[in-house]
Image (cartoon, rainbow, N blue to C red):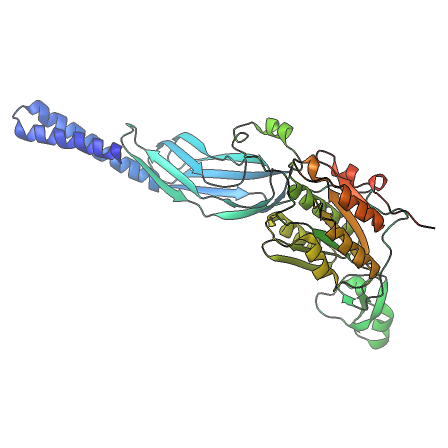
Length: 426
């Protein structure tokens, strides 16, 4: 605004001087100033309006520790060249810096660039909008307009493979027969029915088809395997650690960012989420039905299911969940656990040192559920109470317990050799 007022002031002064004097030199100066200001303004208007931007991202889903690529293309749609363009992006994805300054963009020409960003932090983020700024050759005017639509991207939490996360003796034992129909193909055939559009051909029962003269398919029941319920603790009270700001790493090259990258940031919240995501991936890969229950600002509840679709649902939930809840884990376990069927497995993931959640877990175990505890040791992340009271309660309750400490690889902490297994009495 100040620049515009200054230019108008110079032009007005030249016109006034030319009008009040008879010297033709001032008339020529006024003509030159008026022509320069007018052409510069028109050039700037055309430069800002006759330009477009297209952005394309490789995927709307990514994961912590992986790269995303976004391609940008700026096109000059006019017959006038653009002396310079500034593209300023307002995405809130940490570390994503696609802003550029483009010089000398010819008429009907385009310029593109690719931005490759390492995903540091889980969550849902906005991409865009982009502001394009252009001006005239003399730098008298600048004009800015927003181009392109905004979109969102979801960054899933970090996951690791957990080949050693098995109780001694093999898989979790099976549960009661469920007698529940499923679209998955299992070893339990429940009956037959007529073929319906969308049924897979490997479900066709050929003997019945030959006998009846029409397509007959098999129906299946869920395997009598225990459902696995994950209870990540997202109460705000027990959490320790603070997420760092990203302003210091935005300008670093990608290689240096990768060297500084930490798979799981040093907070108990991020460890709890990463463990829950890794366990969901682990059990679903073994054809288990996995459910999720958590009490953040809102109740998060996913019924047990199998397959990639269930994993996507769990990762979507864990990507945006935050440890802002006020409900203690003991209360969440008591409320949700009472409705779980016998034989189900409950995995509690928490940094809490309150022994009450271990007591509730023991109560669920006595009701016929199978309990496992994953304790994120809070005093390894900062100032926090010791974990000995809750570990003593878990040992007394004979609940298998895994301890996860800050800085230790999750695949190492959650291996069979690291589990505190219950001691058999007698």
